[in-house]
Image 1 (cartoon, rainbow, N blue to C red):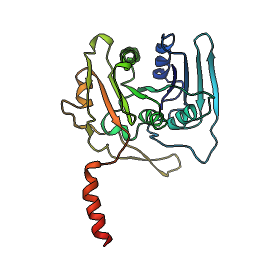
Image 2: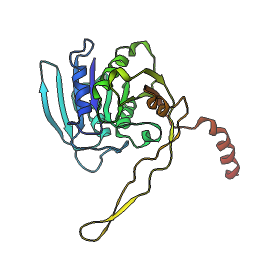
Image 3: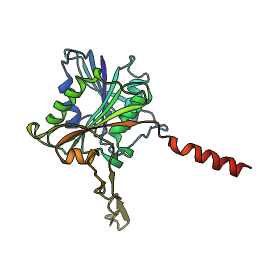
Image 4: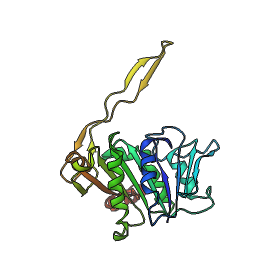
Length: 257
């Protein structure tokens, strides 16, 4: 199996490097290719770079471990698009995005570059997983629990429009209680914009912090992580609201007359 790894924190981030090291030497993996942004591109979502050329820069190659690392002057989606759609000269079998430093739960998935990298892999026909640590400390715990999922993937069947979004509590290994399959929760609106003046006296604005959990019911990702469980949420890429189709068709017919 040939694995493509990406993220939105940058190729140098401790999470992606921990993931890479944890997969090296795995008996089912033929090669590991890391393609990630050359800087932090958190919250880049599914953006593609279309007006500037992308440069694939070789950072490190380890032939003994069948591992190659690249950086790209673009977004997480750019990285996976390049890796799957021709820049490598071969096709990876699977895309893994992470380990992200920080949660990607609830509304976060709309903005997340981590989830977007996995989404791009799925768009391009590859089984894809996004993995996030809900903090910035226990990356080894995240890698351990991801490997437990990875080693058992053959026993589950995912639809071709589905990715797995995994969030792991930022706890020592022995404090994590296990797995829960969850739905997305929902956050309150984000905190207000922070407005300041730059050194020249001109106004600048910072996006405020994410809101707290508004829907953290027992079946949500928020609840699972808060109570010490790894959250596994299947995300469907097809955004069509099928239940609304019939009403909208009737409405469109009416206004067309």
